[in-house]
Image (cartoon, rainbow, N blue to C red; front, side, top):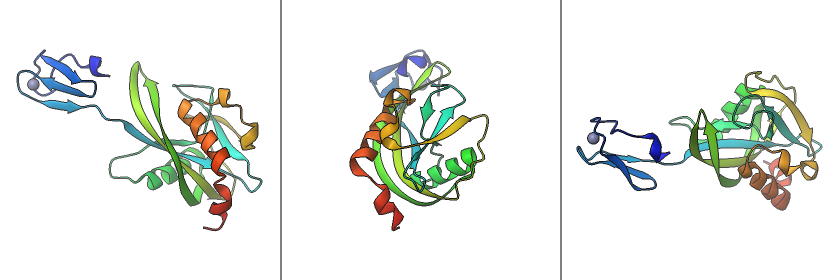
Length: 178
Ligand SMILES: [Zn+2]
């Protein structure tokens, strides 16, 4: 990421370089630019039979791979709000109960820029199971028992970690009583 910046974005000087992997400093005007992780929020949604909702990604990165639904957190938004908004936008689903599950770092390659991401995962219950998928984001979707999900089919390492956390912690029993 640091090598993307050849010039100071404030004064335009070419003397703009990484003094640490996550900090660029301008030698002329002293501008500091920190590279921090982008944060995303993702839901592991279970149906009444305990199967998890997987979408097939319709766009890069990892187009055609399976994923848990979610997206990037907007400015001023909580992670809980972001995951509710994303499920409404992508799938027309309303979350009625959610519980933090785990987090995991991820690398997200988009238009030749590799973004460093922190993925936050929630276990979630929804009201109704009728899905209206947004075609630009979701090619198709499946409900699959957690133990039947092939980790190799998942889009990202962070989602493999979330599946492992789900299998280890079985969050949905507790979620039923919320
Ligand atoms: Zn500068």
